[in-house]
Length: 116
Image (cartoon, rainbow, N blue to C red):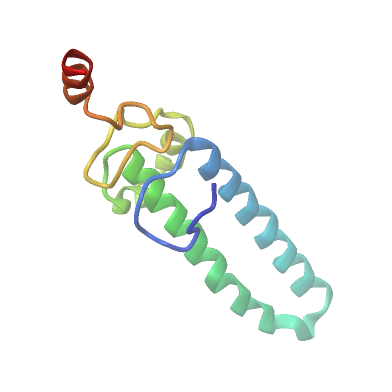
């Protein structure tokens, strides 16, 4: 979990995406709260840049897990689909299933059992 949180490649599970979203909400709330309390701390707005990058990267990887391009996350309310829909079984064009389900070639495994 969280092996490459700022990368746009690969796939992540619902759990990692949900935790990422919570991290984003808490961090954005803290930044907004600190900026509100001390008006001179408006430079904290720069902290939003890596935070937004993190959220978009994690969203793209969750879209990949569903077999879609990362651009799907700009669809309104698609975040709920990313949170609650299960991943594609096995490998897809974006990489192996993060749960490990269906990542091996079943035909090769049957052949190995028959031969040896």
